[in-house]
Length: 435
Image (tube, rainbow, N blue to C red; front, side, top):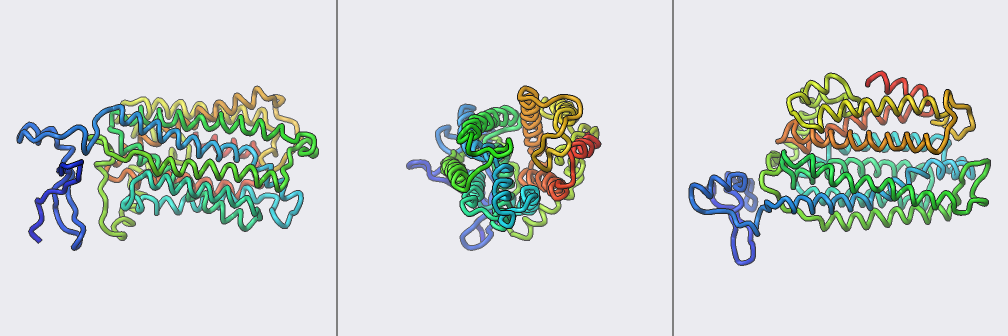
C-alpha cells in the first residue's frame, strides 16, 4: 500500500535505470507498472532527464538487423532437419509398413498429420498464455526441443509412438509460429516489421535448399540395394541414422534460440501488448480473440485461402505486404493447382503409382517449377500473415497469432483425416473453390 507512483528500475553497471512507474501491487513481491520508454522523448524535453543509449532500450536499427539474422539462422538449422524429413518421411513409413504392416499402417502418415494439426490447434490456445511468463525466445527454444523429440522417436518407430510424436510435432509448430512472430514484434516497430520479417524469413527459407542437397545425397546412397520396384526403401538402420541427425540439428537450434538477444527496441510492437495478471483472464482474452469480429473476417486467409473479404481489411493499410501480396498469393496458388492437376497422376496423393497424368508427362523440370511456386506462395503467405496479425489488434498480438494458427490447424486436421480417399483432382477442386 502506498507504493503507487514509485519507480521500477533495472541495474546497468553501477547505475539504476528507470524503466517504469508502479501502478498497483499484485502481491507482496510483485507489482504492476507502466513502461516509461515510449515517453522517453517527452520526459527528456520536459525534465532534462534523457535516456542513456547504451542501457535499457536499444534504438539502433543495426540491433534489429542482428536479431533478424540470428533468429533466421537458428530457424535455418531447425527447419533444414524438418524439410529434409518431409522429403523422405512418406517413403520411410511405406518402408516400415512393407516390412511389418502391424508396426505401421498404410495410411498412418495421413492420420499422423491429422493428429499433429489437432494438437497444433489446441496448443495455439495455451502458447499465448505462456508468453505472459517468459520471453518469446524461450518459446522458440521449447519449439526446437519438441522438434528434436519428434525426430528422436523414429529410433523406435511404431504406429502408436508415431502418433504420440505427431502430437508433440503439433506443439512444436504452434510454439514456433507464435514464438517467432512474437519475437519479431519485440525488436520491430510498425515501420520496420516488414523488413525484419523478410530478412529473417530469407535465411529461414534457405533450409529448403539445404534439405534438397541432403536428400539428393540420401536418395543416391545405396542405390542398388535400397530401391524396390522403382521406389526408394529405407532400412531401420538408415532411419535411425537420418532421424538422429535431424534431432541433432533441432537441439543445436534450441541452443541458438536460448542465446538470442532479448532487449526491446523503442516503440516496438510488443510493448503495446497488454499482459493479463491471472490464468482465467488469459483464457478469457484468448477465447475472446478467437471470436473477435476482426479475426473472424480473416478466417478465410488463415485457412490459406485468399478472398475479397480479406482485402476489405487490408485496404485500411497501404502496405505491400497486405493487399498486393494477397492477390499474388491467390494467383500463385491457382497456378500450382492447375499445374498439379495437369502433371501429377490422380492417385499419387494416396500411394506410389505409375499412372498416366492428365495432360502433361511429369518431368524433373516441371516438378521444380511447382516447388518454386510453392516457395513463392509460402513466403508471400507467411509475410502477410505476420504483418496483418501484428497490426490487427496490437494489444493482443500474441493471441491473434494463436487464433490464426488455430483456424488453420482446424481445417488442416479435417483435410488430413479424409486424405486417404482424396485424389489430386479432389484436392485441387476443394481448394480452388475458396480462392
